[in-house]
Image (cartoon, rainbow, N blue to C red):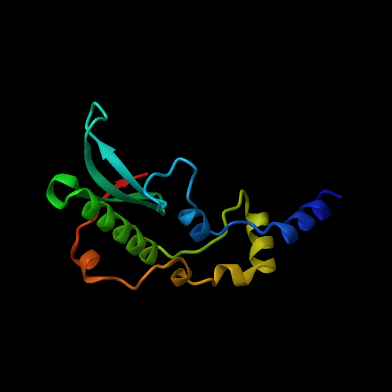
Length: 140
């Protein structure tokens, strides 16, 4: 009975893929792009930088764009572009599931979801900017 109920739910609500999860905009998002956030000074009064962030394979990748160096709008644009580039670098699109059985069931029932291209989300091929930029990484 429980397996039949799970299967019925899966037919109606397929699980999210990692790509879908990574581009989902949360209600508290201020940048308009998932994974792009503002960094403020200690008093939270002055905007210091826009940051592109991506968690992949247990490592957090971040790229900072200083407002002082680039200006507020340009720093935000650069952070959004860097986030799109990070999405192209880490395209290991798998289902976001809680156990191996659920993953296997999702993979067999919804293989087309895993093949959805990143270009659907407006992600462009690698740009020269990101290839020459050193990414700061830290363990997740």
